[in-house]
Each structure stands twice: as C-alpha cells, then as structure tokens.
Image 1 (tube, rainbow, N blue to C red):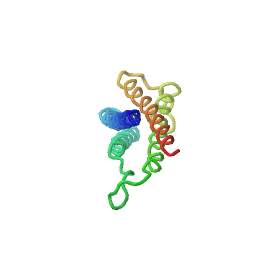
Image 2: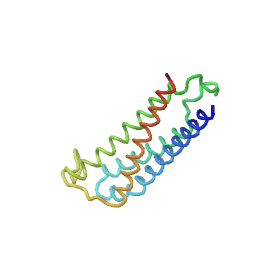
Image 3: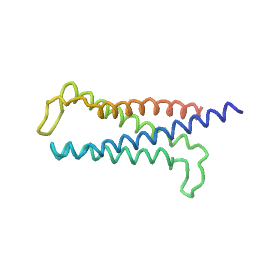
Length: 151
C-alpha cells in the first residue's frame, strides 16, 4: 500500500512538472516571438501559435479536465481519456524539436524570406530544446504509467 502511495505522488509530481515545463516553454516562445516577427510575419505567427498552444496545453495537463464527467464527478477510468492528451503533447513537442533540428542544420523549410538559410544556435534556443526534450521524456513516462494503469 505504501508503494502505491509513493507511486501516486511521483506520478502527480511528473504531471505537475510536465504542465509547468509546457508553460515555461510557451512563455519562452512568446518572449522571442517579436524577434521572428521582425524577420517575417509568418515566422512570428508560428512562434505565437506555438507559445499559445504550449501554455494552454500546460494548463490542460495541470487541470486534467478529462478526469471529470459532464456532471463534474470523477470518471471511473480517467486514464482512458489521458492517453490521447499525452500523445498529442508528445507529437507536438517532437515536431517542434524536429523543426528546430532542421532549421539549425538544413535551413528554414517551406516559406518566408529566409527559406534555406540555417539559423544560429543560441543559448535560449538550446535551453528551450532541452525543456522540450525533457517534456518528451516526461510524456513518455506518463504514457507508460497510463497504459500500466489501464491493465
């Protein structure tokens, strides 16, 4: 029984840290957004959307709205609803990390005035990538635990 309580506390801490790190990453994207907006409206818009999505996603992780039914009661198996949320966060962050790697090695893909130009690696970009890679690991842990709970 004590091991179950320790496991639950650890799961809660992982979830809380995950939500907080999503919010932090979103805030960083929001802070650097004007720099990219000065380059081109499309780049700035991308950073704005990423910032808003990450902050909202962080609050969703923290609030866990899937735990409650339409009447506000706790669902009997909330983990069934958590898995798609965690998976979406994992895929979104993996896409951001992948795009970062492409823009720092091959160059900016698709559109804009700097298409094909390789972007510089900066301290803030490495810090943000570290957060996003940590988020991927934490989401994998949460997915694993959620799958374990449904067994």
